Length: 183
Image 1 (cartoon, rainbow, N blue to C red):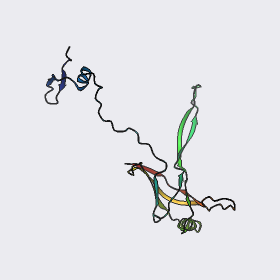
Image 2 (cartoon, one colour):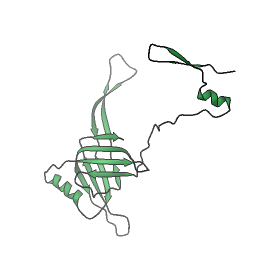
Image 3 (cartoon, rainbow, N blue to C red):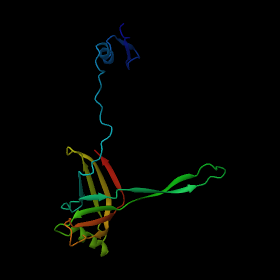
Image 4 (tube, rainbow, N blue to C red):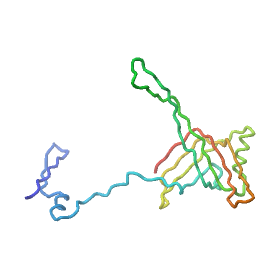
């Protein structure tokens, strides 16, 4: 038994053309082979949490061991509609971004502390911060651009007499929002 011919329509004049060749799937079934598959582009690329780079305008030497706080939170308002007793509507009111927290081992140079001390003395020194996330093969996967960031908290390292852990300083940044730029 032969498969039915395929009918394809062309854009010009609506003329139909009959193709008597069997489809690839029909040929594979006939010879007992698996059906051919077309290569699919990966639908999801998973972010790796250990391959990233943080760049702050004017401070390329800072390497951070931990980045946290990329968050957007939306406040809601409950709206109770008269006569509707089975539900409460929740409407969005306003959104706010969380502070970004950067941690790194204490290194020579005090650029991060000096940046925060400028803020403490009343000089608003805003900078853009770029967090670049890489795939395992080294290609750029995505980029987060934090706009108009400035330090709001600096914490120095904790010292203990009986430990051998790395001394870590923490910098918390407020910012005007962020963009995610996918590659």
